[in-house]
Amino acid sequence: MTVQEMAASCRRPDKDVERAARARWDSIAKPLRGLGFLEDAVVKICALTGDPDCPLGPRAVTVFCADNGVVAQGVTQTGQEITALVAENMTKGQASICHMAAHAGARVFPVDVGMVREVPRMSPLCRSHGRGTGDITQGPAMSRREAESCIEDGYRAARTLAEEQGYRLLAAGEMGIGNTTTSSAVASVLLGEPPEELTGRGAGLSAEGLRRKVAVIRQAIGKNRPDPADPVDVLAKVGGFDLAAMTGFYLGASASGVPVILDGFISVTAALAACRIAPEAVSAMLASHSSRERGSQAVLDELGLAPIIIAGLCLGEGTGAVTMMPMLDMAAAVYRGMSTFGEIHMEAYQPLE
Image (tube, rainbow, N blue to C red; front, side, top):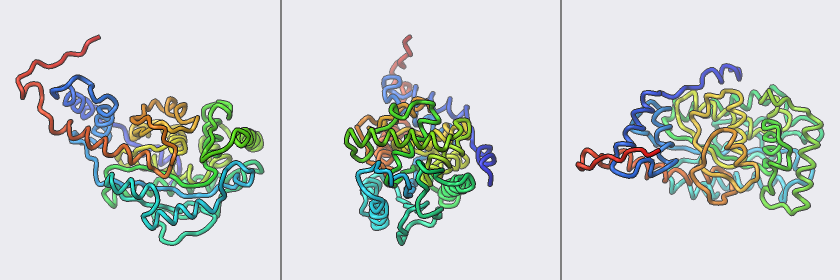
């Protein structure tokens, strides 16, 4: 399946259901828009799914695990062995995302889309596209064909979860040492902003380490000269297997008419790439939080998405996305079950200018 075909499959929201869901909120006996962005999220889910009851389950989070050759440039505090270690913990139910997802009622699917070390018992939803990407300071992360293959894999994973396994709420996370570097590079190119404006400390760099990271990103962009008008070219040249697969995952969720919750900086950068491929894909996306990584809010602003949570989160793995799931449950409980103004014989609130 081509990237163009994936883009063409993205679904538009049902405007009639959207209006009905908004009218339902406005009829409930509480202050108008009192639940803020949570009300907007419920309306968006109803419109995308075409279901005014706001389906929220079953739910799944797919964690895309991959390694990045740019780690050779000293841009991280730890080595690539940590990617496989955390991925292995996911298969045992011991990673942060596993504990948090269990409380949120979500199943975790860790997938190897390109780790250096193979880990047994990873989910077969996606396949590995290589033992880590190339060092982007020396050349492209991957070929264009590899990038397109990764995008298609992520797309098919989302459609499999939604259409074959019946999941009605999806989320994407990632695990890969060095991927805040690749994400900063991709965001810098797509937004047309200098790397220093979008690059953070990742898992914990010193001030000197951060300066080196920015210099490495500048070098990578200069070496590869990615085309900002071609998001697949950007992913191939300065991105990663995880970013490309997540990009496809967001397109697949949109095509299936299933909402997908974004996580942190890496996740939203992949979402930006997806929306540059298919602008309609944003209709499936819900922003969970604004990561502590420097570029996160800038990317969310470009997407026109408002985060629900402001908590200084910077863990990755999809943890911010699953944190939002119980909040959606609470909002939906009010939306579905609370009495209307008419039912309690109370004069309805009127919007004030």
